[in-house]
Amino acid sequence: MSFLSGARPAGPTGGVNTDKIDMAITELDTITDFFNRMVASCHAKCITPRYTDGELNKGEMVCIDRCVSKYNEVQKKVGEKIQSRGAAAGGAGPGATGLGF
Image (cartoon, rainbow, N blue to C red):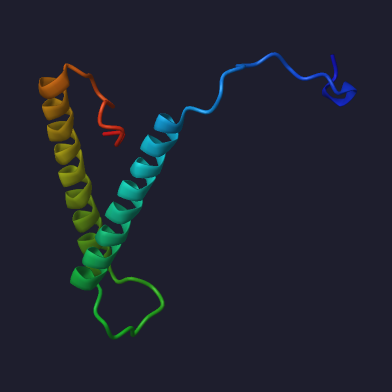
């Protein structure tokens, strides 16, 4: 059938799962906070406050790359630790925290 005929496709008839929405909001807030902290920290560390050029120089690019890599590695380790604690506490598997780590 055409979608123009007004017929609705058969789909889930259940309501919205508010727990999943809350977990998604928490995950988005966590990722946004992480990103904002990473950008602020790496920018302050690697880029001089006096802009002399429209592009990053080689040293700034290398510094930013290393800084972001370190932040991502820490985020990964924290996520793994949260998962292992969640699994030990409740026998839940990955993703039980709702933080997507």
